[in-house]
Image (cartoon, rainbow, N blue to C red; front, side, top):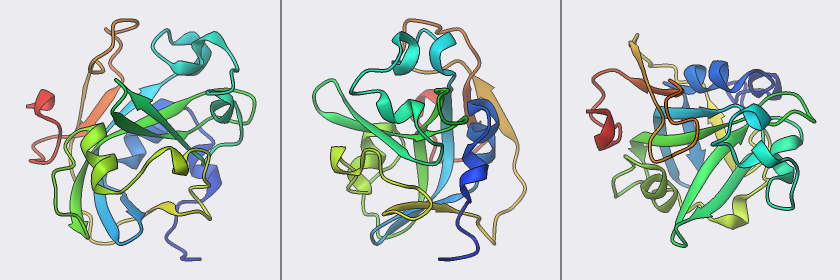
Length: 180
């Protein structure tokens, strides 16, 4: 295991802290890799937009488990979304990975959650997989440059829509079109 892979304790914090700190990190899956440039925090049971707001269900069980696992779901019957479970076990929270700047193994755009899961070949098969020891991993980026983080409300939700829980690297050409 690489020393640069983010440890479980990285994810065992609030979704807001993790969402901000994931920016500039590199996500790997198979031969694909890219820099995380846009995220959204979901606060768990107190956040009406979070899938976990209604409590534990078969679908949301992973959100209440240990931090550092993937939560993948299908939206609109056609797009997969990738989230990283945060907080301590028993307390739900997650971060949606919204956009990635490609590094290698990617031949399509990753400027939206559905686009990036297609580019990284992420499906429901990766739901509940370990981000520390599993097929999807996140690591520090050695060549990362300093950047400014911008904040805005999340995209495409109706509940808790005004919360400033979307984070993205200012001026990055790979963020979703809604950031521009």
